[in-house]
Length: 205
Image 1 (cartoon, one colour):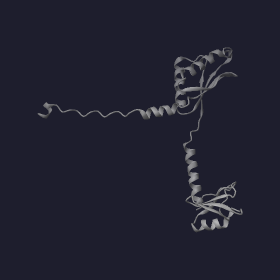
Image 2 (cartoon, helix red, strand yellow):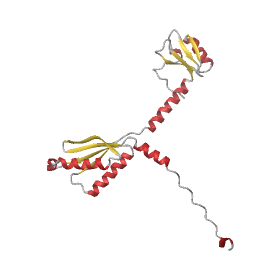
Image 3 (cartoon, helix red, strand yellow):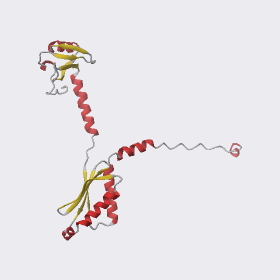
Image 4 (cartoon, helix red, strand yellow):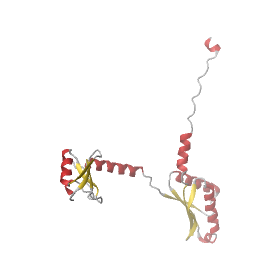
């Protein structure tokens, strides 16, 4: 089974070819300045590697460590960070100039849900035929949307007419999710209901 692949940009062991290096051991202790051969001999005695950690220093700084394990932990950390990273998508919600109130409210709720998930939303009003002669209708729809979502969203772009459509991009208001989490953490848990008190006639039954 192969070990972790070594990064070609990092010089390790015999690939360190300079006159002298400053050496730090695996505990962080400074061992002083010596030749790479001397430093590598110390690392080999401990079944470890000699790794150049600062090539631009004078002299270059090398550290004694388990390079294979270091690479494994670094790759694991990077995979975990990538896994936890939220990929922001831009969802598109389409409106018509003659949108009825029920459809408008339904789409507004969808926008709130997408924003709550951390995504951005492109709200678009599409014009057909002669409807393009009245762009103010689309602007009123988008401005109403921005006003009604003001507490949870901000406009990343103002309503803009391009071709036969007018659009704006909404994003979640900064700090909103953190504030919601803090409020949730601060809410005290419900106190347990008190135990029923026995009545005198119950004890005499």
